[in-house]
Length: 146
Image 1 (cartoon, one colour):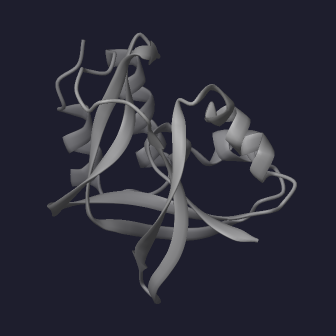
Image 2 (cartoon, one colour; image 1 turned 135 degrees about the horizontal axis):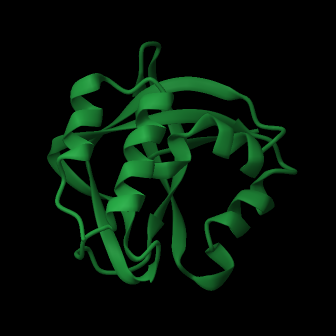
Image 3 (cartoon, rainbow, N blue to C red; image 1 turned 30 degrees about the vertical axis):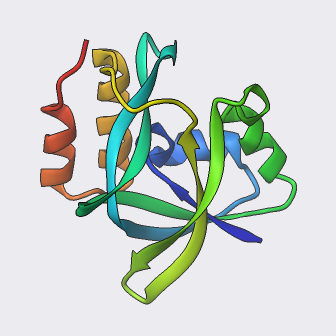
């Protein structure tokens, strides 16, 4: 099994159960030195898609999953890897137990653009469902959108 760091709409445990049914949740963590942003304005969700970029002054709330080998191709398809929308990168996630190596998907497009209000609402609700701190969820809901 490999560790996957979910952020954005993938924070929703119900959605991850659908996308990776054999992959148990490990727990929450933080992607330190990265910031949640939006890119690929014309790729879907009526606006830009959630992604992360390196930024030493920010952190992104994530949920770690132990991805079973049979779920990895399914998750790749959901993320549009075969369409070259996302690419996988390896990162280090800070948890209460220490640092954990994990992979995550980033949008393979230029940063910029705004998400749709609907998509931003889905991301905020997914963060709330995953147990993100209230101030993190509030900051998501206050982001500019289309």
